[in-house]
Amino acid sequence: MLAVLAAGLLGPVLVPSVAGAYVDKTGVRAVTTQTAAVVPGQSAWLSVVWTGDQTVTNWSTTVSAPPGVTVTYPTTRGGSDTSLYGSDTLVGSTRDFTAFELRVPYTQAASFPVTLHSTYTSTCGDNGQCKEQGGGNDDKARDLSTTVVVTVPVVPAIGPEFTQASRDLSVPVGSNAFHQLAFTAGQADLADFTVRLGALPAGLTVGYPGDATVSRPAGGPALVGRTSDSLAVRLDATGLARGTYTVPLVITYTAAAPRTASGTVTLVVR
Amino acid sequence: MSGDRRRARAGAALALLALLGGTAACGTGAPAEAAPATSSAPSGTPADPATGRIAEVEFARQCTVASANFADEAGFTTDLDARLATAGFTHEQWKQWHDALDDSPALVAQFAAVSAAGCPPG
Image (tube, rainbow over the protein chains, first blue to last red):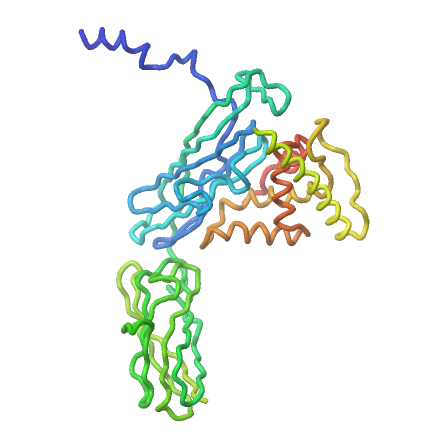
């Protein structure tokens, strides 16, 4: 009884009056209901298109994704939010989009929702007319927001997990230098990507950057999906005669689970 | 919006006219043909065939961008620039057109007209 009485007394104070609440008249809304599809293990830059009836400024969007899915924002915004591609203004009756990166774990095999919370400023009057368009009826700047949920489809990956772009190396006889082996990832990211040479022909010795036991991509430990990177190997051919040799490669990486693959490179000592 | 920003946009709009006019002339071998503005607004960059072509490129992009999945952030700009190049425009011209939208009801009306039919199915 006391609680009911208290609620009755506090209610009008704590709950804004519907009659007094400002209604967003900007017409800002998402055009996109479903993003492009991703595959498990993929890092993907996706977008959601927006439109509106009135011009709004100071656009900012944050994205919430399910646990395990990592959201990254454009570097130009400092990394804590995203805005629109063209600027932070969405001009009424036009379209623009927000871009963000999702890193989808290999365990994410089903489509999932992401929630986009967008904030923006309207300088249109409370009668819905805008000063910029000659009809504004007050000088207020109103900070407004909208929240939408869009679906990110997840589809199975197709194609090889990686391809070896460099299959031949040509070195001068008596040389001892680093050479690059290029690899291209398939659709998904491959973590801890390493390459080492297997059984070597007599007279050939090999080394890796930093005196490590394997070589790693120049751009970082992962071979990022749909990108190419190179791995350096030092070939000491001072004890190797002219000729053509087939050198085995041992390639390790982590996709859904740690894996080891084999390859070969044809070494021509000229 | 500050006065400085408005002045900057006005300057950009003037540059847009010069750039787009030059592009049209280069592309067709003839001076850009003046087109009637699609709005009676007294100020802002007027709409013309060149701005209409940029609006078409932009709307076509907006129709498909959400179905694109890029490996890196730059993919959005690479895609836009390829579309612009096909239509005979540069990224800078697109940027000036985009910035001019805010102060040009004529350009907005032209974009709305271009997009009125909606995106093609699929």
